[in-house]
Length: 325
Image 1: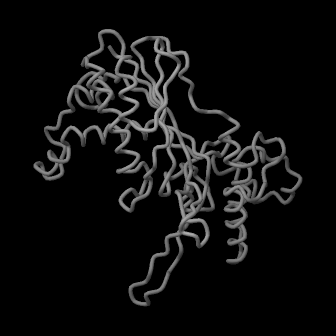
Image 2 (image 1 turned 90 degrees about the vertical axis):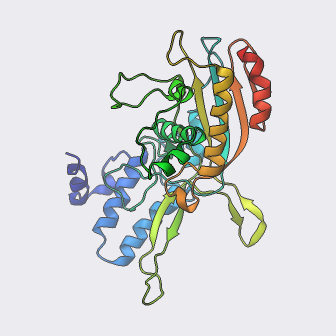
Image 3 (image 1 turned 180 degrees about the vertical axis):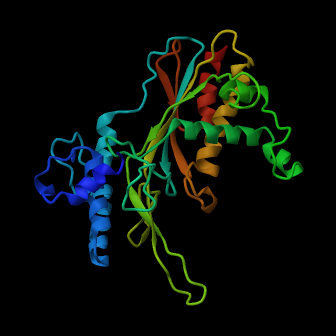
């Protein structure tokens, strides 16, 4: 059934009158993907690719008027899909939102089965907004916390293997244990949320032939763009894609292993800062993709005002220490 729809699109000779779901992001993607695959020459394929790239970048409005938003940035702003933490139910809970701007491109491959690009960025199926899943955040944050706890030294001693590694209690408190570890699964106190971005751009990697020392076949990556020079002026920059990391620290009474929030929260905030500014959150991190500049830290609590916001991690921690006493 997955492919029957695309076969129907190819065989249908009256596509211009067919009421396809063009108001959703998938309608246009399906159309240009079929056009690309039907292209009998290089020019037709290039035309389909250019149509898609212009549309995805927001420079060409090809979404029907029934859509809630005609461009990716407008969609992310109109939808207001960030979680709200203004009414936390428990005084032991803390919530954080970390606003950031990408300095280098962010990429995570989409799981769409049929696409004209080899490397489309992961997007919400309904609105076409690029996003990073909560599970990805959790895995990366756990890894950074492990690095803080000495995982690098352990791997060097064990020849790169995780043998005999055991997460310290504060990491188990935040993230729980992993399924398949031979003990009863227990979830942690930390809840993470997806992050939606406000821009789509493209990067081209052009592998070179060692014999001819010339480009072979350009490889297109659909990405959330990072900050880059504006034109030929190195003093002015086009802003990179923006996003918000949202976290909820929600311990419950009697949870094990227990931990003191005064010890756990500073380590968590440090891990967030290192992940965004040093390690990066994108695929292809080894070439520097996915690093960001943190623009604002926000914290929420039930009994100490609705929220506080600071420009640095240390200032935020100084503000919220009294909330935990």
